[in-house]
Length: 407
Ligand code: C5P
Image (cartoon, rainbow, N blue to C red; front, side, top):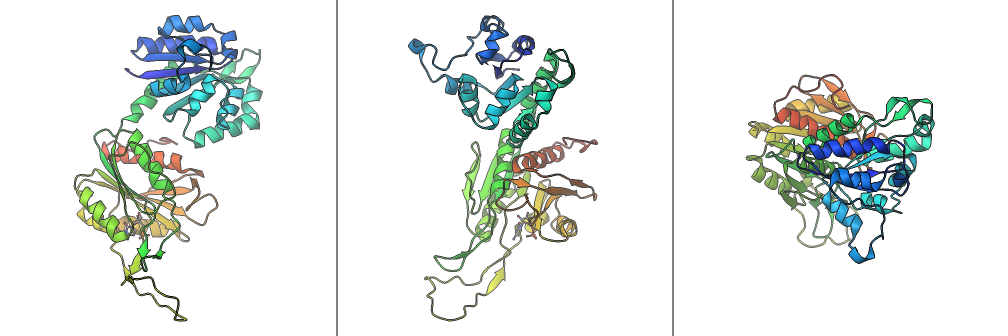
């Protein structure tokens, strides 16, 4: 594993086990750097980690003025993955709230890659609603949490809160890093946002799509190594970094043109855009003046991009969305068949925490064989991950869904 792993050690007794984690990672070929909180140095000497990793250990934010460089940014740039082990309750609280009051927490804020957090503490502290709420916040942000084991604890009690064994922590890191490139060499088109259909040069007909779902899908596909082409209508959020191409479009017709241009060489299209079903037949060349009491706009049907792709499809995996307000599963199943899709993501946009504008969703995935997977409320980032992982199974011709797969 030729990867750069940054380990953040916080002040728990289990810090001693992390010496073994660092040693194993180093032996497997990784370049390992350690940062510690001041409290962590009470449990293990920085020198121990230094000898094991062959790299200087960072503790202080402003320690060495003579060699000053922006340490937290340098460390964040170094890392392919950051492991925090053991993660104390105090650290989890700080991370969940974006507090940056030492080198370790500041580095975390400056890092936008994969983070694995391994909490270890007394059972009551772990089960405390405050700690659990902080863990939920982190999970929703896409931070991976390695659950503690149950067993004897340093405080003399027995329960949940033990840091998993070094081999378990290393296996989890391997898994996360391997997952990252599962879509290498695959071209994935993702559409996002809503199309705008012009009424005149000033006004348009639009919809409430924020573009968040599509951007999260594009982001996870990029992190999985895919060549991602993002074609976005109106969106409230910035496209992710690392895209192969990015096209900003306005109308359904423009979106159609871009999607068709890219389709032949694509391995998969995920149509999460809210494409307008109708457009104004003859948009006015000049701004329409406010004179008549009633104004009638004639609308004509837009082409259904996904249905066209369904007809053109060779080996491409096609994923559609069904945003509905009633009879969700029935409508979604109908679209799945009519548009010749591999699976469809259905959601009730009227349910609280689902649909447009919010960062969470409640969705079901419907498969060609009739199987339905129903997911609880989750962040759009988490749902994006589930969608992309299923695409990967289809593209790599793996059998999908052993019971409990990735739930
Ligand atoms: O039929 P309906 O519009 O509800 O289908 C929704 C799915 O079809 C979404 O995946 C959406 O992106 C796609 N779609 C499309 N072209 C349209 C309308 C919807 O590709 N004109």
